[in-house]
Image (cartoon, rainbow, N blue to C red):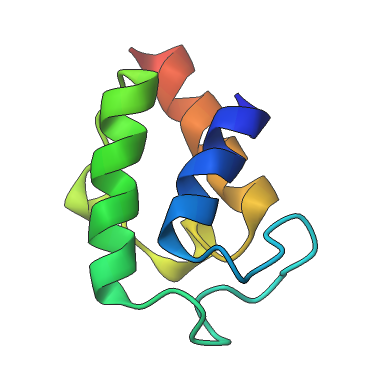
Amino acid sequence: MRDELLEILQDLHEDIDFETADNLIDGKILDSFDIVTLVGELCDTFDIEITADEMVPENFQNLEAILALITRKSEED
């Protein structure tokens, strides 16, 4: 799961080290267009549904937060 997520993130911004970046939203590394693109990719790749209520900065701030969101959504479905 982690490797697939890293590949998706690298496709968005190949110049960012997402394993160490800890401020993806507040640091303006990911913008709203990136988030919409990322959510679409996550839903397709991991067969999950992410609602508008879950599209909050806390869920996309870093790699671990995104992994936690994917894990949580996978367990719900």
